[in-house]
Length: 309
Image: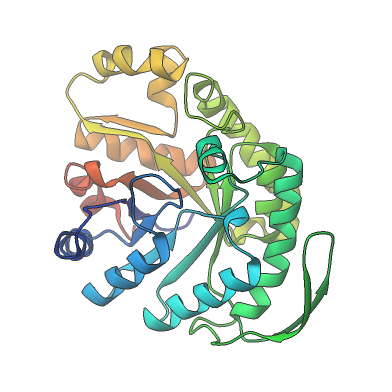
């Protein structure tokens, strides 16, 4: 089993001083990683925000969780990822996905192809990006991209590769993750383009068993090298987890028992939450836990008890 580590996902505060203070606080509390999503709504652009966080901290790792491949040409992505890794002193984790949020595409006037096309394009983009980030020369002729003798500059500090994060909730994206990713994120299925009650049933323990099996089959001999990550969307210390489950279950589209057992929820007393995460690692191998910034302080005792163990 891999040691526990914890990340904070944040989209603000929306001013320089607050952003730097938040990053320093995450580092001081023992969080391993600060991550940013990639959407067109009210949040910072992820890569400049991560560079700013790097300048305010010394050991905190920085992650894109995750870039949407359709928003950038892979050559642009590669140059930006390598640059952030250099400017952060080799602290970047590179997460990339196929894009999922329908409003991003609608409001920006981008064509949102069906999932299979977006995932195939993502797989090809990764083939272009990884060698460029490593500083190698790329010649590539594919269905979606053509690259002619381009040298990747700058080369990333982390060699032979910046850790690659790929994840999701559907079979095709998780099979891709199993084949290529260093870190596989287990998520609910977001093919609907929104997060609503349709997502909950894809986040149950039984659904998670199936997702891990998809990754295992695709990964083959490299399965034991993969680090599994999960985003905990509901995280709260409470003496009444059953009462909280009664409240949150309808929004998830599942019953309270399934809501409490989902790897995307963590509620209860601190000792109970610690035991829950240990049991989930034993069952699924999930050791990298992501919280929203709103839970950063309340989850700090859990982080203090488990980080690095």
